Amino acid sequence: MGNPDHPLPTPTTQAGREGLAALLARPDRAVVALDFDGTLADIVPDPERSRAHPGAVPALSALAPQVASVAVITGRPAGTAVRYGGFAGASGLDHLVVLGHYGAERWDAVTGSVHAPAPHPGVAAVREELPGVLHEAGADAGDEHGTWIEDKGHAIAVHTRRAADPQAAFEALRDPLADLAARHGLIVEPGRLVLELRPPGMDKGVALEEHVRDTGAGSVLYAGDDLGDLAAYAAVEKLRTSGVQGLLICSGSEVPELAERADLVLPGPEAVVEYLAALAQRLRPDSG
Image: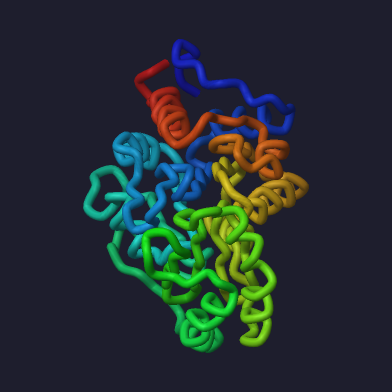
């Protein structure tokens, strides 16, 4: 199990303590699943400048060989998360997968290849109509003080973090974007100053549950920071009812809906990376 000289923060709930105990007892049957932005990487005004915390790859390289799987589950394209994470070619990551577009894409460290289906046809229609919708709402994209469109291929995200009043712009766009999405068979997923239009049936909960089942894991740790992670939280809570122990970690406390359901709240990506490194050290065969 490792050496208690390397203590980990204690989860505040009984279910979380049981989840951590199961992971420590049988790491070979554990899945460690992680969101990317806000969990492994700090939130930044320009999503294209997001990069994993410098300690993330070393921590994951130390942890991955000791568990059944490490999965990064993100709304970003898998290839983008791999580039921004610095995962390609890193040693020790054979057990790492990146489930991009909420599981619609998969990148495996072993092969270095991405597998993905064709995009939903509604995404192309939204891509064409979105600039006009933003203009009508008085929220044109493109300048440093306006909204910003992130084209993810399988989904389209509208960020309001650059707007003069980011929260007001976010609220003003909720209904127009919901109408646009509905016309083309998509849904809107809100996050921290971002509204993402994507196909239904794509969420982190579905991706996580399928991955846990595929690996035959007996325990799962999931860490996230935003509303899009609620589906993964629900999946862990569901898995607990079938005998899979779970530990839910919240990165930061800016999203109370997540923090209130977490077994452990950590201050942000730096603390999450430190936790993963400590977990890896605790699991080292020569540490006990």
